Length: 397
Image (cartoon, rainbow, N blue to C red):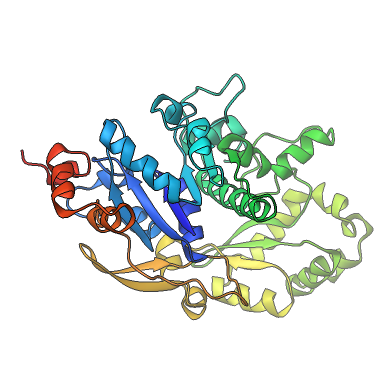
């Protein structure tokens, strides 16, 4: 399967990355200046770009030049899937929108993800993960009750949209097998973000009152206790009693048999009304122990618990190591670089693997155009000289 990946930053490239792990050949079509993320550091490819573009081949094409557009259309004729996450209308303005491409290749599955979708009053608003978090309610739901709205630390909307786009493309490919026809797949980052707000929306839809917009690390609807991060002697742990058996086990750990048997604490709604009291009791217990000690005790008692880890700790997490999540690649400019494989594991259909490290800008342009379009050396040289395929970074000053 041939995928043309015009994705930029995180959203589109993450979709293309997942398809590459499933065995697709993915051509990363970049403008002469490269992916926006690539431009964050000129001396070496930034890590997020390397992380999200393993297995891909980089082809530089200036789609604003007639010859560049002509070459792109020739590639579209051979493609199975196209991915783009430009603002709504950009591809149409370039003259290479879905209506044009679907006539050229009726079997093409065209996957597009924009901030707010192809219609509606927000269609033309500028969209980045931080602005989508704001519009979807995520920012307002994040932070302490007495603090300001706070964006999530992760680029949640980019990655939610990217994986939704991948799922939609796979569904369209299944339908193409049945009908022979491709189709357009559309994902709005805004809608993907709203879906993740299930607990907070639940409080609204259920008509709950007196629930603050932000609840810190407590349950978004203030419906469960214990449900928080609690201090230890060396950091924090997250504890969540999802079922009555968890609460009973928690009481044993706390040495509070009286709470386990008291009717005011015997139900989830009852404990939610005494949230601060319960948090104080749990905090007093965790504070005298290390994260590892709390984790060992609660894991033995089958109470959901986890240490709060830093990004540095996650990068060396022994579980991820044992699962083979990290793979060492030999990047042409960065040298030895660790990158993740896909969280999607197909146990009976092959395994995720890094076939090649993320490419440098335009690394495969000549190879791909010679192989797929049968362009000769003199034609390739002409394209480079005209700037159609030559990266900005390689042009003469």
